[in-house]
Length: 256
Image 1 (cartoon, rainbow, N blue to C red):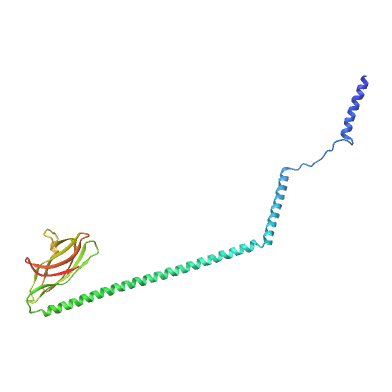
Image 2: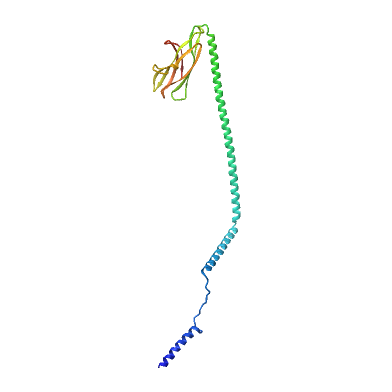
């Protein structure tokens, strides 16, 4: 019994060995071990080739469809150059236009100055004519009754609100040549505001600067100055008087 058990056990062992190394043994695959970095490099190479191939196929497809990148880039470069040329030309024309506008402005300013000079000369010529006529009348009045006159009274706005400038020529006529006037100028101003009329006399009695209205002449004297009225008040007329010893020796009125 003991030997039979041993023989059966040996037979089982032999069958197992025969099944592993015999014809019915399982197949064994022997593979070579490759490091991971070589595998990664191979994968990158395959992907690069794939991308390059895809790009070539894409470019080829666009060429077949009539779209060429090089031609497009050349055309875009030509358009950019053309835009730069046009911008430079526009800048040059703009500079010429500005220069022309500056020249026109200079000419316009010079023309305006000439017009002002011509007007000033015309006004001066008119004053000279008036002076000539006045002195002719003054010379022809020699031997007549002595007296004083006010000539060429002018009242004009002075530019500031409510301020006016007055001009006049006071003269002696007839009588003795050494006759002298010593007195003052008085302005009687007619005003209107809100439908109401009022009178203002200059200089006022308490005016500390009333000496500026004093006049002293033998033959004639030009008088000018300014006066101020309340803003918004309308000046209707101004009467200028020559006052000597409390008596009005001459007067003239101008209506605005």
